[in-house]
Image (cartoon, rainbow, N blue to C red; front, side):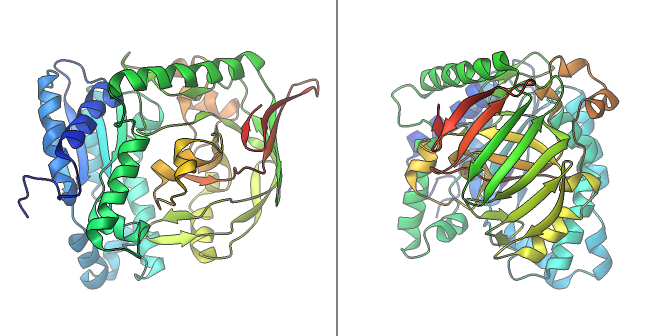
Length: 416
């Protein structure tokens, strides 16, 4: 295969549209702005098109960093044990410095979600924790929304084989390609205009929720009776929004969610997952947890329970919530019926919650709040931010006001 060209199953014209949407809609890259880009090596055909569109938009310097699955596996199979408690802090310090100088961030995802499924889970957990600690200075620039950033996907063969295991690889790639392109609104005559209309619809939902000023959300459904208190001064977000550098961007392509910050100490009740969670090469399914005073005090899973336990033991904030997001059951990704094994897509098929770090932008005047003020208002701090799905066509959600008044928000998985 010519490395300059995408696999035959991927339409080069649509791939070029995806690159254009990444730069114009996802990042809204500004003239003179640098771009730091990460991607699997298999996504090189998209990376090259992104670089071209970035420079056409006036980018200063585009710096790509590519990952390779065989290099990753080589570590688990041959590295000394001490390797798994280390991470390249020097690299992440440089990335944090770049972000502090207004470099934009773009991540192309598409790695095999089950790459580490057969590796030692203890080593996987240790490496993830070391990486999370080292990455913290850079991550804070992302969760604080200091800069314009974006995540989008490329249909790698390894990923496609996981999503469609019962067909030939070229057919799997073709199906995953079509699903990604449809969810990213590339089938529209003018994808940029289609994103503008979609962002307007998300904005109307966001504005309604912000006007309500709910004190809590109450989720009920099979295996779920959960009250999520909302942080003091919380602010709903969704679709395109301005980063602290003033640039309006779409952090996720695709996106169907409106989301905000829960109060880390005001979550009560029990909840069951409605879709599997793919995490670091493991599938965690049938999650059931119980909260008391904001903290998970009981947790089990039908599959991957040991991995879930390691996640929850990452740090003090890992057992508390950093995000709650509302997504209708009729979202295009949900309607596709595909389990993507990738949070970027699967979280946009269902209402979800996230364990760990909150987003400071989900507070009124969040850009001016100190970490201490965010914590005082209920914002959570953690090395992790892991989304998992709790919505379905059987879940109802009520908004609860401070005086106890209840307003229907979702009925049977749809906006009420």
